[in-house]
Length: 88
Image 1 (tube, rainbow, N blue to C red):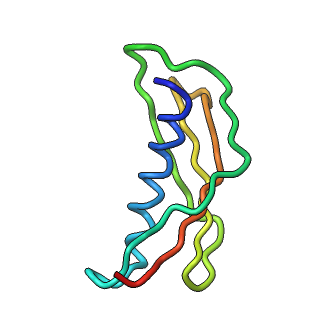
Image 2 (spheres, one colour):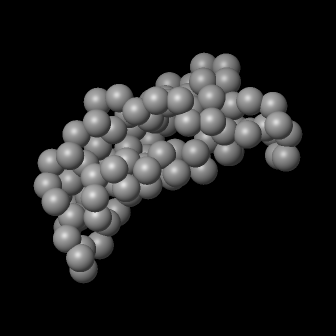
């Protein structure tokens, strides 16, 4: 799985996590930035990719989360992703 798709997967999981804070049907989550992105090892066909995302900071409508992708317990990529809640 290419590194950019791993980053996209972390952003998607982070967006879903951010939806917990959104007012149902009244707010949307926008992706703002990816920082400290590191790709450490390749992910090959047949590997089971585990994606973990944890909220680091949440202030008002802005949220920053840390995502880690693992294969077999080894970290293969990581990033800090930032989101913003906005009215629909």
